[in-house]
Length: 446
View 1 (tube, one colour):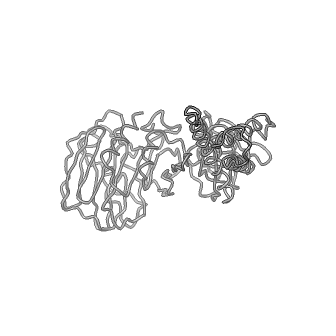
View 2 (cartoon, one colour):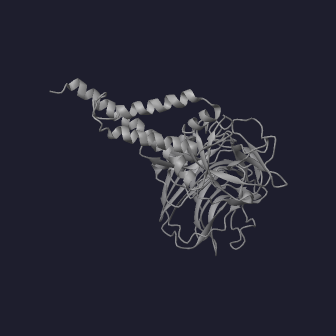
View 3 (cartoon, helix red, strand yellow):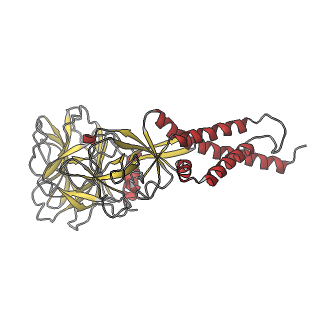
């Protein structure tokens, strides 16, 4: 008769060992797959991009045209400071007048001293934690940790078998599986090339059985909360120069500043992200896309707003609206320091019973539309209403920071433009629930 204690121990041993092996295999397969797909796969060898990506992580990057690179993106390039094939994975800090890239590690106080001239460049797509260590150990001739890892894998393989440890029965399917995992890890490591430090500053989260990974950047708690709800675009407003507004949603929906924005204002989330700036529109700037949306039955506009003084906003100050060929709709505006919603040009603005404090502080704002229902949250207050006359089938495009911008000329400014600062703009093609908005608000306070 089987010993119940021994049987319980066997079950725990098998389950634990198989879980660890599945985790290792789940991590090891991603660099291999991306390398086979033609991605640049590199192991992180130093900590200049911490805390987002740490030493031993692997970054997979895809080729991008040099002229398509934008400030704020994470790129892998040939290190311009050294001769040879060593790679550098850093954030693009700015683009110089001659077109070269000025890069900087997120953990570094200053930009890199040597600009990156035109040449091969790869855009960061995937971070996989830890699996780059075998390549780093091999590069350094550190054979002891390599051998130790192999022994540990074989030990886990033996422990994963339901057969009693030490049995002479040759049927050990778990051992064969673990051997396959170990081989996979080794092959994956051999396909990883060594690089200089990088960071996890991408934008799409994915889950696979036993492993999780983040594609993109050091997002902070708020950024992670936003991306978990699948925005259509996400402007972090962290570019220090240039006219491009980089989309961090992972969908590539970059846009363009119009007018003369001030892009050096401190952002809404101090401490959450390494680069943290907002944009002062000051009544002379806007963000306008040429993308036309045929149907906007549902959408959510979300941002952090910092209003100027009451006197500055005595006249109408437009935060955002949908511009149609004949007018506008779903307009959010400030007047006399109070927040208003206006359904369209034939409707009177609805006073939302809130004042926007001229306290030199950011305030969370989200406008969620679903058919004729609208929910608006400002900080911890919520307003709900019904707009029975709202039309959602008229083609329109989103305009941020100005009113009645010429429909056929998104490069021009409109009127009644916004006289304050905006940061962390997200647009969704679905209506966020009150629970989701509350979670985003809570994440912004971390």
